[in-house]
Amino acid sequence: MTDSATKGLKPKHQRLVLLSLALVALIGAGLLAAWALRNQASYFYLPSEIIAEAPAPDQGVRLGGMVEMGSIEEQPDGTTIRFIVEDGTAKVPVSFTGIAPALFVEGSGVVAEGKMSADGVFVADNLLAKHDENYMPKELDGMTQEQVRKQVEATLE
Image (cartoon, rainbow, N blue to C red; front, side, top):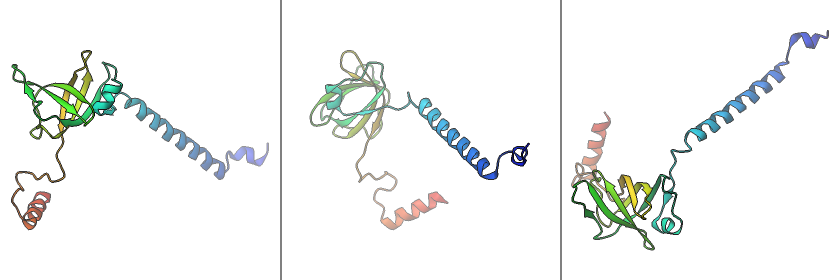
């Protein structure tokens, strides 16, 4: 036997094997994560996109747009609301059962998570209300910049 056959792999080849194994493990972890999240990701649709090409009835999606002025209707059961989401081009009726966020008002932005029903109404499981960039929490409203800075510092201590 030769001397190199009895010693095993050279250090240079050992590093190459370890690097290859690490790369395979990294690719495997990425593929596993992508496979695990395949049903968790939901696509964001605008009303005009839903009208043009509606998703499958069992596919969970997000519908985003503006709540049309005068469209919010509370149903007799007290927990269901119906409203219209529009994007300036198209309108989609939405039904939501539950407690709406405090920022959910007509003329504001909204993201509804749910599914399209066979009758063309988007049935929302969750509502996310958007606010503009001028939003100020009630606790900080009316404070000067110095008072706001002190309040924020106090919460970080």
